[in-house]
Structure formats: structure tokens, C-alpha cells
Length: 201
View (cartoon, rainbow, N blue to C red):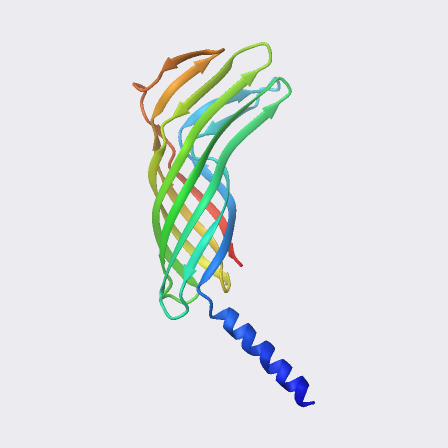
């Protein structure tokens, strides 16, 4: 009986120690909407789909620092953000790799509020049509911002509403193997609204 009690106490102490840790591995995923239209794909039934500079899915992973005795936290993630559409005779997509560094205030029960920097690497839009054009636009890396509010659903898990603010400057344009300078083009607005889930382990 004594051995059982001591074992139970040891497990409880271990769980408590784990609950007090301040560093978590985090994964996140969600949907976004917004930004300028980059490519419009048309279908034979009269419908169409727009590839937009702020759409559509973003998934990421990184690290969260959240001290148990402080109302602040810091989160760093590497993400993949993309919008794409496939059809029988071709496809189109816009993809980029955003690195985000965010800081939050956790002093309100069940909530966190914050924001920070977003650095989108290698933004690229491409479209391919069978028997037609192959088009690729490379944009310069873009530095923008994020504003986010999250509602806590577990110790280190939140459902978040966010706004991403960024613009993309074209670098070059390739059509059917021929590349042209596109640095004089107007900037593309990639600002978007999103909902995601962040989960810490």
C-alpha cells in the first residue's frame, strides 16, 4: 500500500512539473482569405476560381515560450502558405514560406492578444495550361506584420483570429521559358484575414 501511494505521489509530482514547463513545440493550421487576385481560372461550365495573394491555407510548426508566472509569451514558427487550383487541362498556384515571430499578452483569462513580424520567403505564382502558356512570377521576399487574438482551449492551445498585413513586389516574370524584368510593376496586396488553431505539446 505504501509503495502504491508513493508511486502515485511520484506521478502527480511529475505531472505537476510538466505542467510548469515554459517551452512548447507548437503546430498550427488554418484558413485565410484576402489580397489581390493573381490568377483567374475559368471552367467550361462558366464558373471560375480566383487565386488570391492572401489565400488560402497556412500550416506551420515552431516553438512557444510561455512562462507560468508571467503574463507574456513569445512564439516563433516556420509556415507554408498557399492557394492553388487544379483542372483537367492545367493548374495554378501561389505559395510562400512565412517565418513569424509573435509576442502575446496573456493577462486576460482564457485569452491572448498580440502580434509581430511576418517574413514571407520566395513568394511565387505559377500557372500552366496544357497546350498553352506556362507563366511564373517571382516576388521579392516580403516583410509584413500579424495581429492576432486567441481563445485558449487547452493549456497551450488556442483558436485564433488574425490579420496578416503584407505587400509583394514582383521581381521577374517568365512566360514559356522567356524571363522578363518585372520590378517596375505595382505592388500586390497580400493582406488577409484568417482563422487557425495553434497547439502546443
